[in-house]
Structure formats: C-alpha cells, structure tokens
Image: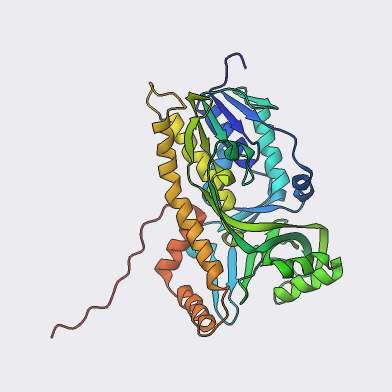
Length: 391
C-alpha cells in the first residue's frame, strides 16, 4: 500500500474481514491485522455453523463472499417447541421469501472472505497493529485491545455452556431448523446442513454447567443417544461427525463503543461485533448483529462530510447511536426467553406454553417478528380491536 492506512482493523474474523472489504469499496485504505489463530479456535473450525439472515446474505453477496451451494443450506421452515405442548412454526412461504435463514459452514465462509481480501488492493494484511486515524476492534468477546483501552465490558454470565457438534441423521432434515426448550432453560437446536435432501445437521445445545460436564464426558454413542432423545428422535438415529466443542455462555455489552486513543487523541477507536456485544445464541443472531455493525460503520464512514476524518469522534458516535438500540433489543429478547424457561414453578410452565401457542396464531405479530429476525424492513405491527356497540 503506497499511502498509509486510514483505518486499522484489529481482528480478521468474519466481521473484521467483511468490514475491511466494505471500507475498501468506499475507497478507504485499510490495514487488517491477522495474527495466528489460537489452537482452540482452530479445533472448532470444522463444526461451527452460523445462521445468516437475509440482510447478512445480501451484504456477503455484495462482497462476492457468499459460500458455494454445498456450504450453505436454506432454512425453509423453523419449528420451535416448548417444554410441554407449546410450539411455534415459521415457514418461508408464509412470508413470501425463499428462505427464513441460511446455515453456513464457518470455514467456507471465512475462506471466501479471505480470498476477497487477498484480491482487494486497498486492504493491506499485516501481522501487527499499525498507526491510523481510526482503529476498529473486531477481536471478539475476549478482546485484549478493548481491555487496554479501559472499556468496561458489562458481562452477565449464564450458568450454562454451549455444546456444538455435527451428526448425520437417519432421516433427511427437509431444510427445517428445529429447536427445543426445556424447563431448565436449556435449548437444543438442530440446524440443517448439506443442502436440499441433506442428512447432516449441526447441533448447538445450551445446557447447565453440570449437565454440560456430563455430556462432554460421554462417548460418541452415548452422546448421540442423548441428543436424539433431547430432540424427541425427530430425525431418527444420529451418527456423530468429528469432535465436540463447548464454551461458556454470556450476555455482554461494552459501556463505550467509540473514543480517542489514549496515546494520541488525534486518533480514535471503535468496537464492532463480539468486541462490542454478545447475546445468548438461542436466536442465532450473534453474527447477524456483528455484520450489521460492519455495514452501519462502513456506511457512516462512506457518507461522511468531505471535511471529516474517518476518525472524527462525532462521526463514530453516529454509528454507536445507530447500533446500540438494536443490539440492546435483541439482547433483552434473547435473555428474556432464556429466563422464561429457566424457572419451573407452576403456573409459569403452563403459561409460557400457552403463550407460545397463542403467539403462533397471531398472524401480524408473528410476521413482524419473523421479518425482524430475517433482517427485512418492518413496520410496527398494528392490531385491530373489535368495535364496541354504542350504548
């Protein structure tokens, strides 16, 4: 890169690479810091899968980073079941869309983004941070840079761990994402992989700590049996593929997303993705929120007044204001759902299952919630109440 970078992005995960490409598309010079991945992250590469909504799909397609068909599977239907007879179903056809979401293999998605970065002349891949008017921190929830900046990362730890694994199912998944809540607040999800007619599924199971330890200690056959039973044998017998992984769950948000660099107040910093916030994975919205951060931050920089630097703090606060509200709403919604199922004392179980069934029958509200999750434009749902007779 002949000229010095205007932006240094610390962290070359999905959000960091997408942001680098978006900024380069706006003719901003970027230095992307890509240190060696740690061993734990590499060990999880083969089993991770993310749910991407329509907004994320369109963003990645605009960057020419959407995975090939063999590495991304459309979700045509979603089935959610409570701890009794409560249930909710979403169908893509009911909302006049091709898919509710897409389940992507993480390694394939990361490779497409890495290839796109390699062919973008305005992105310089570096091994260590460099000076720039703006530093953007995309290092994930354990960000060392965020800590060094003195940002308070307000963490609420759930008494749970997430367990991820992959299986080949006896029956085809039918492009259906399935999710089960139980009375302990545990959530088991089986996500479709392998395209139309595929039998491969990705497990994401949020379980209590003691239960997680027991599950991780089981052999493959016993673990597959537990997963099949926990999912009501919806797909028949399950055969494990590869290793399992587990990590603690938390809800967190940084108290500041932007600020001046401590060593030079002429330069600024901003947080994006998990470095700024994390939510419970039960709604599958973590990466979608991070990519929405990237899109919003790139838009603010690309449309700035010609006399503003990319590190102008007033400019960066526009980004923070634009994103904080949506992130907080999703964080509260996922936390509320987890808490709702974490308590088993009557009459709460009966009420929450009645609530699920009632929600499933409310066409307007259900459509609004679905469009929010898909990242599609929404208007506040309007309800028509019956007119009372005039006395």
